[in-house]
Image 1 (cartoon, rainbow, N blue to C red):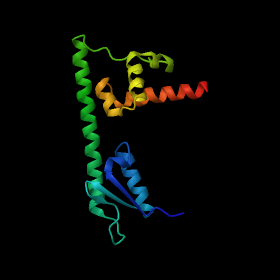
Image 2 (image 1 turned 180 degrees about the horizontal axis):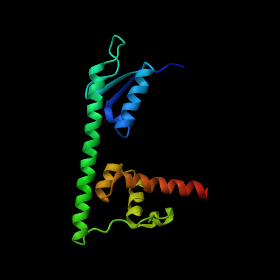
Image 3 (image 1 turned 30 degrees about the vertical axis):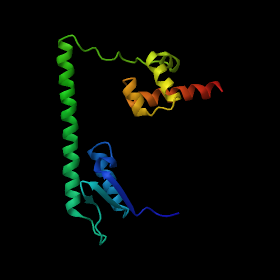
Image 4 (image 1 turned 120 degrees about the vertical axis):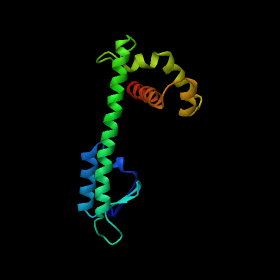
Length: 153
């Protein structure tokens, strides 16, 4: 078996869910001698000569901190929007612990339409435009049907 020598990632946020994860992954892979090559932004943990790239280390710390700040700002704006909608009586949100059973989900008119188009061979993008729903909903409905079929077979 071959040993991993290089890891290519499109974006630095692919290394973790938050700043600590990204920095930890970066550090662990660097310590193991695995070269990380990031395309966006252009960074690498170990240069072509096998030395730790100090500039990229600095940039990764700054970028990770900035991305956390940006996520926090988005969340703050989202919560402000919800607060305003609640004050106007326009926001209810989903009740706590509400979830459809698999059977109930598949009986919904939207789910039936989704399955109908899946069976006809439409792509997820086509279905999401016809039915108005997200790709996630389509995948959930399809997987739920498959899971129920496996249970009943």
